[in-house]
Amino acid sequence: MRPLDHWNDVQLEQARELSWARHGKKILFYLPGMFVRDGVQGQYPALSVTGRDCAQHCAHCGGALLQSMPDVSKPGSLLEKCRALEAQGVQGILLSGGCDGRGRVPWKNFIRAIAEVKRQTGLFVSVHCGMLDAATARDLKSAGADQALIDIIGSAETYYKVYHLEDGPELLDSSLEALAQAGLPVVPHIVAGLHFGRLLGESWALEIVARHPPALLVIVACMTLPGTDMAGMTPPGAREVCGVILRARELMPDTEISLGCARPRKGAADLEELALLAGVNRMALPSQEAVAMAAGMGLEAQFRKTCCSVHLGEGTAGW
Image (cartoon, rainbow, N blue to C red):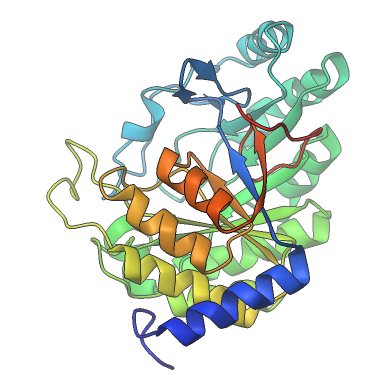
């Protein structure tokens, strides 16, 4: 298996042409709810069911990603917050939260609240599910969760050194099986460079996803966050992340590929340019350079103010 950063312009063109043939010569641009672009707020915020608490202490995050999420750690506050968000024009929510040291989010405490959110509002509900058992997956499906987002990691060493899980691959396999049995739609995410900035298990992660090709795969890149164990690491380069995109297209020609929002902002335009040349179908938080490049490539562009994992309503000609 060739290293993911070993590719050439011919492979780039082949991936682009294959993508356009299967999915059309177009691009969907996304503005998630936790971001503002040119004074415009996204309409798909992330909420934390554990507030700022997380017992996992992952090397890349350390709970930092929860700090900016509204705290809905009491089931009643989740329903109240969702009612208010819908009144503000929000289209849906991403439910996330900290883990218990075994990679699990305490979903059982929120099943009834999620069901009430779905009963009392028209919000689309995504859950960043973490590791889960069959019963929890069934409960989330029964409550009305619309989709599950789950990180796919292909290296046991990364699970151990980054997530502090000795049996990460086994937990992932059982979680994917639970989601499949429950019939809960899955949007897998692959974090390029999660192993302290270098590619390690991404090729195998793609092989895992390709066993049952999803409708959509989201590829993001590991970021440096102050105060974490990876604060001083060098993030993966644009060429490396593009290599993950190219291999994903090779393995899964009928799967839409999105360049997600979780990626370093420094040098973002370089990665976005390569992603467009590789034929990605969706892109969150595009730079002005990327939008202009898409127009120059003759791509039909639509703009959506949601998470890139969803496809709600009609796209617009701008934010």
